Length: 183
Image 1 (cartoon, rainbow, N blue to C red):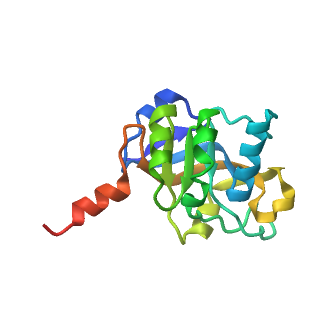
Image 2 (cartoon, helix red, strand yellow; image 1 turned 120 degrees about the vertical axis):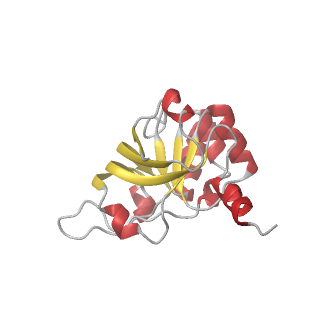
């Protein structure tokens, strides 16, 4: 059964999500990749205001292709999440509740998810064109100079993801390996 959630996320929603859950997200999510993360963390460390409020938000690790005429965005598939690992814990400390990407996360990031009440979702890699169909609108909100890696505010409807890491320490990738390991 698909769990339908809306953004911004509240702790009560996050605590109900478990590793392996199929989730449909509706509402606003933000895009950012490693260069944007580096800038966000620098702003936090320097005591400056961020270009958007992180409280309850989800960041999608994506660098979308240019939009075709009549579409809000081009292909929008997930990118490798590990590149954001050095920055993710401090963003969670400042209110980030969810991340979407592909690939596993570091031990430090998984511990931060438990500590700050955040969840990591995986989107299906290689399905960027299909995922883009779930994006209703897109606008750049910061770092336009980064091109496809600028921070965008996306309005999504029924955006499909799976919970990889929950706040209880679950890890879908580790569970998958255990389930199919030959004894």
